[in-house]
Image 1 (cartoon, helix red, strand yellow):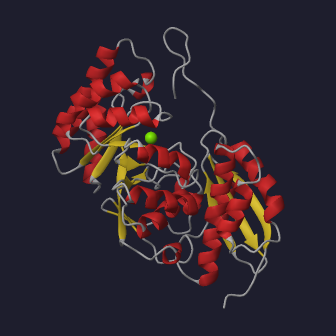
Image 2 (tube, protein in one colour):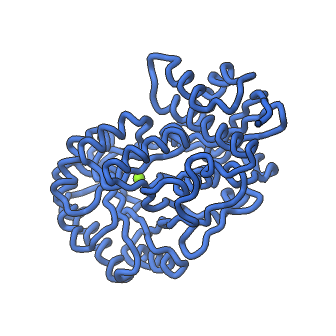
Length: 378
Ligand SMILES: [Mg+2]
């Protein structure tokens, strides 16, 4: 029988570009989490402070109950609410694991694997730089790389569709030629095309056998994304912006994704993403968690990846450089492109307290403006 405790203090922490959370219990247990509303960390921090008024004094083990109470507390929901809820949910799972002396995956069905395959971000201004970066990732042991197939410095500036699409085809082709068939290629379009353009480019990329074609258009219309999926012979990956199981239900029902991309720090933490993963399993869809955040997010993803049967691939952006390298007492173990599933309790990580002095480095709002002065999609 586990002894009872109460939530004593909740501390949201703006750390570099990310939002972390610490939840303290009366018995000394401290849970760690992260909220992932990219660009809106400050409002999400405020939302955590608002939610704290309810959570203080409560039993930290009633994770689903607290989630439901907070989620249903207002008529209006959205990413700020879900980012705060996700951070809280992850920290409560960390507390539960620590208090029961088990990793979180033990509480969610147990391990289905010992390590998780990662894809590494690669890139470059020119085609040659991109190829060099991809080759380096391959040499480092990664068996999957992901890139955006155009010049990152003029990412949103398309003089003509023809020129832009040709550039994308050449870059993807050059990476395939350099890597051969030993490495999977993941193509990220960052919502830069309309549906017709998405289909046209997708058909031209089929020859290079990409592992996935991510967010070719804005993700808000599952039925239209479903049309793209039907017309291109490349698996579509999408869902990083979704905040609830309900959005995923519509996406899956529209057969609009071969891979879903839940961001665990946005779509309801481990509770929400475990439900989303089970829904996807019923559609034979695999899960590729979105993870552009801190090592706390990476550790959270590993806990989910470890226990779901339909894990696909894990996004990884490298954690060997400051500030990320400073956050954990022991970095997560990466070997030959795989992250090891840790044995430690809770999330399996310990925070280096000194690193939490890192000042905030908020994302600057910089919506791109096109050649004609109009606002472009980000
Ligand atoms: Mg993406």
